[in-house]
Image (tube, rainbow, N blue to C red; front, side, top):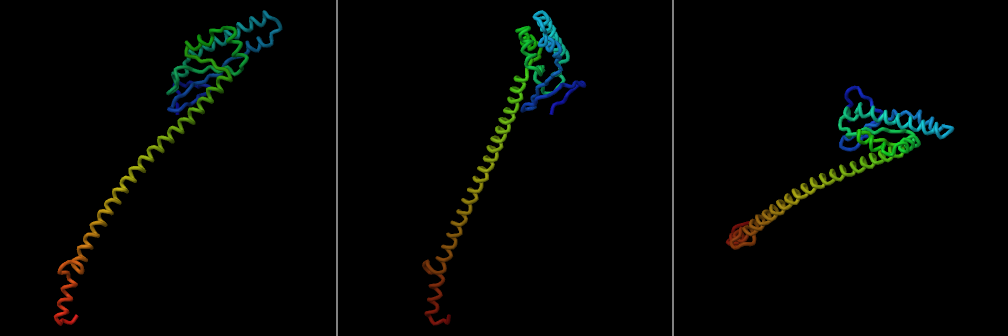
Length: 199
């Protein structure tokens, strides 16, 4: 999980593997952009665009001051400023081509809906890869344990084989003494029998 300190309430958190997290703020006013989009003439449009850019810059400065990401455990060093309207994002970038880099220098990353979908897709892919990697590590660990057990089992089988060979040798020695070898028990018994002793 990710602990949020100081009573801060970011709009969303995007979690990545290894407890990494991105803080998302989406409280971006698009009132000036709406005026820009609905303007009837070029002058009103220019003025509305300037106001829209100033509004975005003001929010960047506010996020830089609040620094939400510093109050969220394991957060990246920046906060994502989500502009929920693609047109508003493009208009702001058109109003000041350096706006994105200025924001980034203040540890604020401006993203549009298209960008956010890409970030969420990246997070999902990383979680999938993380799960596969963890599964591969688990499989390798379990395989190692299985090989260790097989090695122990083979050693036990070798011991059984040695004991069987030893038992066979003991059996052969006993049979040799009883019926096969020179002066064996059975021959001696037959010799005694031939001398007239009843079996």
